[in-house]
Length: 549
Ligand code: F6P
Image (cartoon, rainbow, N blue to C red; front, side, top):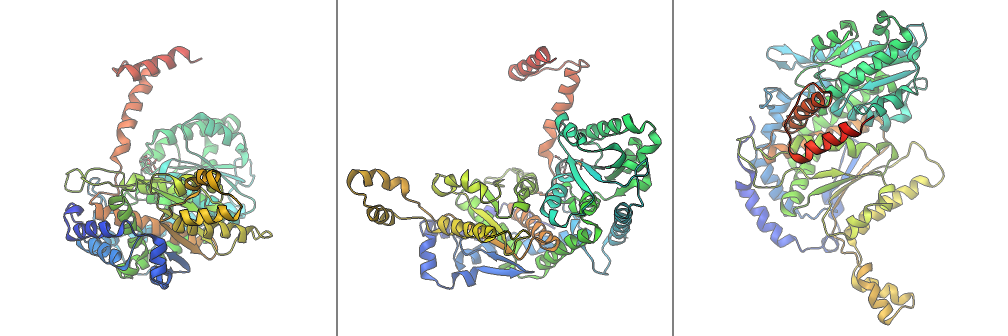
């Protein structure tokens, strides 16, 4: 069971407030000077990935108090409840078992008397068999040609994970298959993908947990009509369309046969579904064995979460640090900065994972929070971000904690590119931490021969306050295993954070209102219904109806 108390009423929270009052003016530069062992004390290597927390505004006492907070909010019990398959997604009456999808142990995992691991393995065998047939050329299109293009049609969790992973692991891509993604209901998305593919050699994967998501169903119908313009005969659809869903009834109504349907279960949340059949596009792109390596990387992180003391537990520490900055420093956003071009879609993926999970105001006891919850997640690949928004992180008025991620080795070791890239990674985290004092600026300008008013005018513009916290994450090489472990780490961070904030992290009621209103407005625009709106919305709809061609 999960606790239902307001975390601000715990002893730890009060102690953290007092501790914050003492620590808030201490500079990281001084903390490093005072303790030469700071890196050793605050960095951990797990499964080949180094997590360095030492450039965070913490001391050992901060960590002690944060761990006390995790204990008082019963984080260890919550982890057990999740892994055991309890119905911790109470507002939807569901268990939360994405970890079962990457559980390779030979134990049973019973949910309502059924061993869910057996069902998981059945679908995994189906996926493997499908991928093998696709890659060997045994599975052909309606004219007997081998499949060259796979198009994943899905949105949210049925899109962001597969797209991010496919991009991140491009180096492992099978040479003769190209994977594309259609997600947006904007016809441009479908049009631009369909322009690149050929109906004879294209396989469409319709990925939707519910199979009721309007965007996905609209795109699926568009793809089918486009395909039938060439194929003519409905009988050919079975060679070109497969579905990934929990709603097998709706899939068959759409016209996809049971043997072409890869199922999963309501205990897999949309934004945690990458490891289920929703990962089929990844397996098509890389081969099933690589997909399994991704799952095994995630399994290693699950074991770490389960078996490691909180003081060394990476997802727990990541969650606690985020709470430290959000609730005590009042930071409102968090930057994710991958120094690996292959990870350029990671910030977007983490936006859904964290903001859809914990962007909430109602606590588990039904009361509303009196503290901040999820900060905005954003970011971009280094070094591009440095030439865009880093100015604000360095010298702006808001505190933005960040995660820097980089591989020790590059998949593309061209010339000196990788040392150059990593020099920037190290330099940025150092500059954010250290800053540049007025004294240092003056000395620098004087050395350049500047003096008097000319110098005075420049000083304040060149001062960097520093003391900007960052966590550095370094993995050896971006392999499927390393990526699986990293994604699972962020999943568990999200869960732990929600546990402490007393939120239900696995529902997403906040997306419903917009969906409902869009349904009514669509009917109105098509002339089937009339509806009442405020003057702005009515004015905008009227403007659109009047001007559209
Ligand atoms: O945006 C809401 C949401 O339900 C997400 O949580 C989910 O990932 C996405 O829509 C897609 O849902 P489905 O896989 O059911 O089409």
